[in-house]
Structures are given as structure tokens and as C-alpha cells.
Amino acid sequence: MNGCKLLIFGGTRDARQLCERLDARGVHYWLSVATAAGRQQATNLQGKILEGRMDAQEIADFCRHNRIRLLADLSHPYAAVLSDNILQVQRELGIPLVRYNRPSDIDSIDHPLIYKVDSIDSACEQAMKFGQRVLLTTGSKQLADYIARLPGKTVLARVLPTKEVLAQCESYGLTIDQIFALKGPFSMEFNEAFYRYCDADVVITKESGTQGGFSEKVSPCLALGIPCIVVVRPQPQISNDVTELQDLCKVEQYLASHFSVC
Image 1 (cartoon, rainbow, N blue to C red):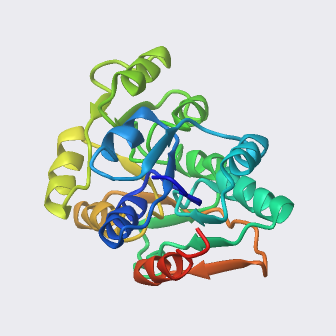
Image 2 (tube, rainbow, N blue to C red):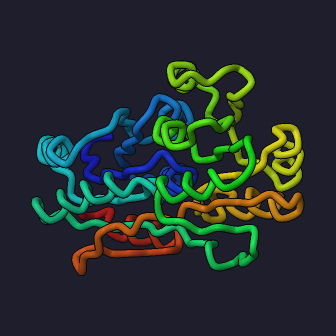
């Protein structure tokens, strides 16, 4: 791994698929993931794994210390703070940055039961208009924000099955009847059966794209007549200095073509 000058951000499936392709090409890299779960899912990769969230200063320091020459942002579409931090480092250090924009499915489904909102506040305000049982398929990162904004509701949370996440759920006062620790991806058939089992009155989800199983989460709601609230993606900062790509193969080709620089 000597001479590794490529730093990739992302605990997503997109990032892991990219790394697998780079492994096949013999490209060396660092992969930065936020959590222990992200590291666990990356154990089969050949790159060096960094675990833990970094702010802009920490990213910049790492890049200077390791002489990073190329940055790749494959973070989750909702990790806007991280993307903005990476862009700040790119501007400060002048390191080339390629950013992968996961294709969106938000306009592929239009239905009266789908409510598109731009914030947690708006999502909860909408959910308060429906029944008692609110199913969250938004992960654990902002779970406390949802619970605080849904007073009087029975919040059901589908989260990753890690001890840290389970402890987090319990610290928020959720009971074993409200916590569903499962790892996706999930099929439409599974989600439909799961929504029935939960007896959900409304589902809150994210615009996660094909890789995040967006259609598989939304379509069962429509089949069952359950309102589905979709929190649309935050818009990251735009820069002319950043290469924006929506095709994972093109990201791979871009990074491989710069291997001589890395």
C-alpha cells in the first residue's frame, strides 16, 4: 500500500462496489467510513480503512500528512455536511475531487399517497396528521430528532442491528416493540409483509435511489394504501472545480485514469 494517495469517502454500497473494482485494477486507496458498521461491511476490501467522522480540519490534516492527491466523495446522499467539508478541503488544498451523485428516483413515482418534504420538521408535521403508528426507515442518525417532533405517536424504528444503535434506541426510550434491527437491502415483498406486521399508519423514508431501495420501500405503501412521506435529498454545494458524475463506471474510469497521479 506504499504510495497510496487516493482518499475515498463513503460507507455506502456504491463506495464498496467502486472499491472492489479498484481492487481488481490494483489501485491503492484509503476508504473513510463513519461507523464501526461501515468498517465491518468493508472487511473484504484491500484498501486501508479509516473509521470515524472527521470535520474539515481533520480531513485537511489527514490529506497533508498522507500527501493525498485525489479525493472521491461517495458518501450517502444525505451526508450533506460531510460533502461540504470535503469540498472545503478541496478548495483549501487544491486537490482534485470527483463526486458521485447517486441517480435519483424521486420523480419516478407520483401518487396522492406520496408526500415529498424537504426537512425532518416538515416530515413530522405531515406525519402528525395521520394515524398513531409512525414507521421510520430513515436510519438511526437523526432518530432523536424524529422522536422529539412526534409527541404522542408510537414511533417504530427500522435500524441496523449493532449494539451501538440498539443502545442508542433504548436511550431514546424506545421499547423492544418499537425497535426493528434489520440490515437491508429489502425486497418489495419483504417490505410489504413488514409494513403489515408493524401495522404502520404512515411510513417516513428517504429519497435513497435504486441502491438504497427507494422503489422497494415506496411501492408497498401504495399497494397497502399507507401514506408515505419522502424526505428529499439536501443539495450539496456546487463548484466548477469538482467533477460531478452519476455513473459509477465513469467514477471508476476517472480514478483509474488518475492512478499515475495517485
